[in-house]
Image (cartoon, rainbow, N blue to C red; front, side, top):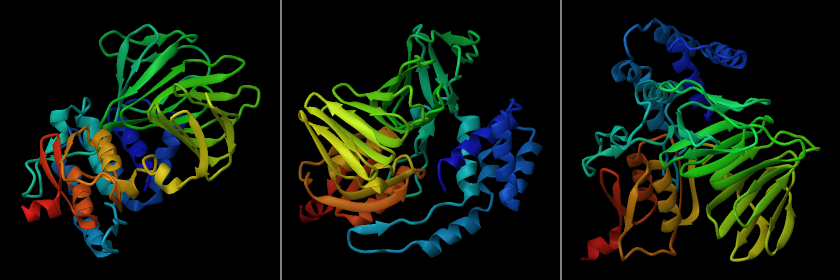
Length: 387
């Protein structure tokens, strides 16, 4: 199951609100309905609802059967390797997605806190939500809760309930801001697809120039660049520039002093103040402390966030804590007795509550956790036992 589930959830939500869908969206919805009889049943039940959706209705859909399959598939794979190779059925994930799209538009911190099913935690926290805000070239800020398609020609127009349609100058830059506990997907004016990770910013014009296509990134994003040999595509992240013609690649630039580009398809040139390198599919280029180094990429790990997974492979606690912080919007504290060099390996989907991730980490490590609202304390379980 991939992010397509979230796309379907958004289309269903808009259909339920009687909003106009594009031809492509109608086709996607029809394909989804015909792919499984249960999907058709879910659609019919949703369209028949006249009152605001309630969580009880959404949670009842095939839940018992889906969770029974989860229990049967879960396996322990070793002391520090746990393949959490299970997930809720499409119905359950779709129901949760629909609920929060329809009923939690702002997705504030308070709305992300839910009752914990584990007695050791005071509360639980929901996973990141589809949402962002656009700062138009005019300075106007508009929240967007759906994927965004930038028109090929003309100004970017975004609906604003209070002030009506808002437009941006095609020659100036708009800024997409994706806060912690959010993610976003947009299609640029040239057809390039961009998945933007939590706690990231992407600056882009409403319309690219006739000579080049250039965007500016802070944070992390995955690009599927539309082919256009006459207009090279550039991604700038401060000191590092990535140049492409048409390709699929990931850029991680949360730290401006450590920028990593991982290539899935095509070819890119990565340049910094210390030179330039061209990498092939399966390679990565990492710029660190004025040096540019080419290595073999672990695409499953580097693209895990885009594929809706946590994939910890030899990660230390600092790296793991960062991933949890941006996805669940946490205030994380590490106990003084924690090793910053010990590494851990584990895997789980990212569309689960925080407690599920913490349980997985407990199984593959000597870590323990204390959670109070959005404050997470990470403890060395062995050190705690020795005291």
